[in-house]
Length: 188
Length: 113
Image 1 (cartoon, one colour):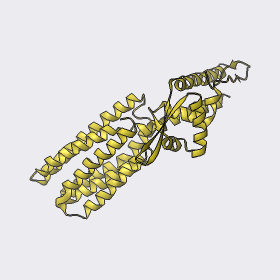
Image 2 (cartoon, each protein chain N blue to C red; image 1 turned 30 degrees about the vertical axis):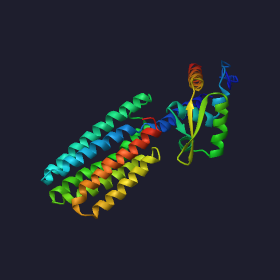
Image 3 (cartoon, each protein chain N blue to C red; image 1 turned 90 degrees about the horizontal axis):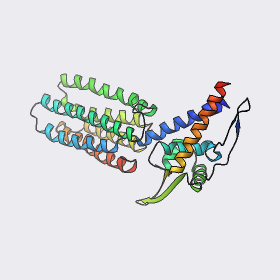
Image 4 (cartoon, chains in turn blue, yellow; image 1 turned 60 degrees about the horizontal axis):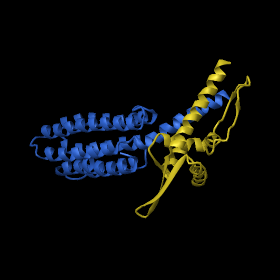
């Protein structure tokens, strides 16, 4: 009887964590990240040196991270969930390696003067991270990840001058569209 | 209250832990109520994925919870696709809280023996 009760409580906790993972994705946060990326694309396109261009996008990365962290925290709090509950922790563990790889490759490509390859690599690896992390989340999240992967792969084989447009379409457009869909379907 | 057919759970020493809610004691129904307690609302497909069950099984058990006013069900269309959305009612939330209290009481009773 004791073990059955313990098993029931464990089942309830795990079910609540799984269900929470379905709705804890901050849709409006994604939307806001998209809007800020569109602004960054405009600013980055006006830069005259690769270093200034890279700096504009790195600042955007930091801003997007902050937006994501704050909105995730707010949404989790509104659902009475721990920010680092089981599924959120799995998402972070799955997503982080791809982002770290992207960071390292950014340094390597920039030093090698291959700045034009950076947008495709960023989109591709961001997509990989989202697909991996999204395995534990709502179906629309891995779909968004695959969309980033496809866009990144395209960007790698297109003229370097299109880099900003690809980044605007991915980090801006995809975040706005998918963020809106998530917000409407999953309570914000 | 609908669905609260009392079920006496006896600990080994004979101490009764009264009134298990039969309706949510069943595993899948407990899963539905727990999942909805963690989200403002969930669609039929979200629940199916979250609980790893079949359409038929989920329909039957969700209907029982709906009849007991533990959950509400809203049907709509998203474009041409039907969309069924479930929410936990206040009655359902209280039933889950009561069930959790009973489980904890049972665990304490067994530990104290």
